[in-house]
Image (tube, rainbow, N blue to C red; front, side):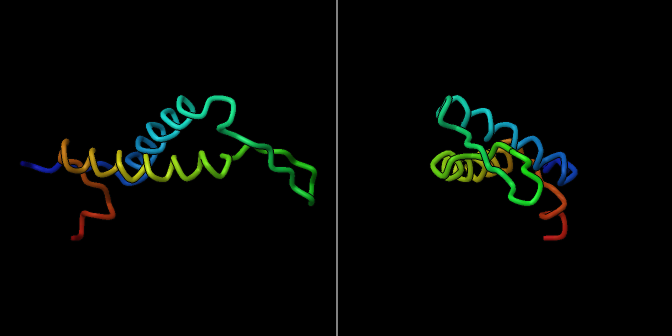
Length: 80
């Protein structure tokens, strides 16, 4: 199978979007929690611990599937 090259940043963005969507579908309202900065009182949303673990697993799974089934590789693999 001929491998298809994709820029690493685009590849990561694609895999991130897939993993984020499936995490949000799986965890619903329990996907995010607020994180407040003590320095500037800025509040941002981050994954809950459980959602983060699930996201990490899904990211790895989607990355492997994309590499293996579609023959895609990124900058990180280009030199190997």
